[in-house]
Image 1 (tube, rainbow, N blue to C red):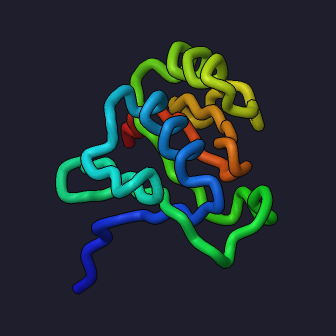
Image 2: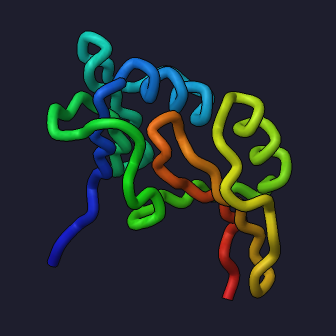
Amino acid sequence: MLNLNSLMVGTTQPKALGEFYEKVFGKQADMNEEEKWYSWKFGDFYFSVGEHSEMGGPAKDAGRMMCNLETSEVQEEFERIKSLGAKVIKEPYEMQGAWIATLADPDGNYFQLMSPWHE
């Protein structure tokens, strides 16, 4: 059996992405290696951004893989994160009782705000 324990976002601008996600998450990175790697721990899961020499420019397929950030306050978090400089991809909308909004980070990678999903 596999256990998903981390998600890494490669970039050529790790400091900019690290500082952006520190604002998004509202806390300093749990690990910061010389402003080239930033990691935040959420339970047993790590979200990391770091220098990757094979990356160049904005994400070419930005929606191929998206990180969902769960919040019961989608509209409020959407406004807050938009004010941090995130690019709006899709304004908050309702889908089957859940609220979702899609934004992009400074590299153009998409991420979503999503209310808790109740079946």
